[in-house]
Image 1: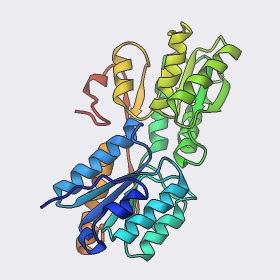
Image 2: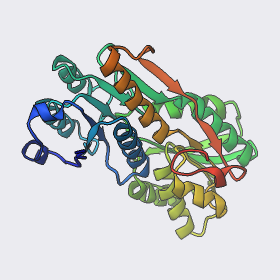
Image 3: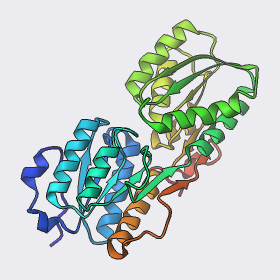
Length: 308
């Protein structure tokens, strides 16, 4: 009989069956499901794993590398077949993935790379640079190639934050009349973005636009702008969330960039299945998936990080 396991943290060690019974189990480890992007990853991986006949353990590391390491210890002790991981830090996660490899458990990374190759079997990530350029081109057009703007940055330990920012600036910096008056991290957080946006707006009341490293921060910024009566400010995000889709359709946030979280997670599981059966995915370790611009023209076709 099929048994799906939803287990968290150290409680997993007491709740699971002996290791031999988990040989057909795939562990799925992501940041908090409070962020709909990471929930979509977990849901996509879980659905694909179960469709292929695996049991699943769905775990959350909360972007805490120490917690992530403990979860790896638990998964290794449980004898899972493979790990699907959206990691808790490019540098900090290498040791955990290596630990699993040494124990004979392959890891398949999604969304975020680590700073080592040959440790994970696959690193499947969105083409963040390509996507950021799409978002920046739309932002420049919406801004009319001129005006003061703000950039909200993601978490410093996440390589995606830097790649997206670089992609933004390689486009925007070509337009001298677009002036960045503030650049600040909100750590991918909606609550933090709200507070950051409030402070920036007080210091720079003449801003015309905000470009954000992800949709969660874009939503926080938009809420602060609405509260201040500044719905004239142009906001562009990155991820392709349903929340931003609804804001776009309601005339709020103007655009985002879709990275296919659900599809990416399913692809990682399919590669894990092939690797477990044949010893190879037949593909390079690092794989890029292109992003898609979402605006008023196609937002109605967006559903749970995928275009219908």
